[in-house]
Amino acid sequence: MSMNTTTTGNLVSSSDVNGTEVFGNDGTKIGSIDHLMIDKPSGRIAYAVMGFGGFLGLGEEHHPVPWGKLRYDTQMGGFVTDITEQEVKGAPAATDNWFGNREWEQRAHDHYGANTYWL
Amino acid sequence: MSMNTTTTGNLVSSSDVNGTEVFGNDGTKIGSIDHLMIDKPSGRIAYAVMGFGGFLGLGEEHHPVPWGKLRYDTQMGGFVTDITEQEVKGAPAATDNWFGNREWEQRAHDHYGANTYWL
Image (cartoon, rainbow over all chains, first blue to last red; front, side, top):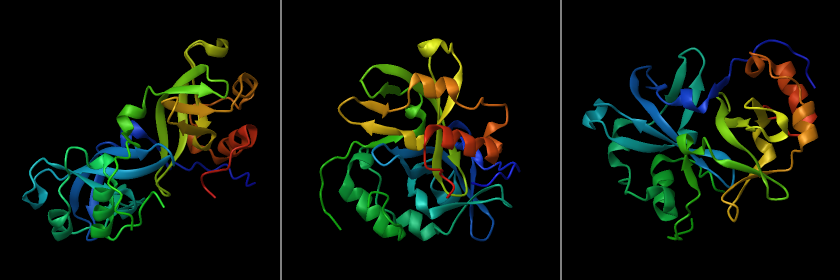
């Protein structure tokens, strides 16, 4: 029951998350968040669908990355991830209905070594 | 490690959450989600900022409601909440910088009887 009145500044509108930069562990920008995917039953954010904008030679494609792989870095003013070029290139291809296919989701989480959001 | 291949259909883009209807416990529509507020450090959704669109005589004002007060109902195809007219009307007024004021956030969560997202 803290009465701390300092501002937190940690909350951001879901609209404003889109476009936020994502950095690799070495501090270089690797892409940005295009939008988030939310799991309605749990109320949790499940994926950041990221645009890599030419990085990795991936063109403007969007790739879903498990949300747990990103953490916010206040000093960077953006999200940081330890995913690598090899991991993104080797990830299970996102079919049109990947977000409705639990088998694909399991493979993607296994691939990135991410905890699943549904357990 | 389920290999269940049934579609989940539970994921929704953060953009598409905006506008989703919110129903009261009795099934009547009470408002809709204008946008979500996300807590960057924890990666959790903290608030649904709801529009009540004339319901409760509240005009078009937007009111932040702790996200934990909403649950998704697959049969309704929308979110359901047990918050009442009295609770919304009696909630701490959302000042311009409510989302950066932990003291306000604590009072709002206390008011709605919601678990805080930051502990």
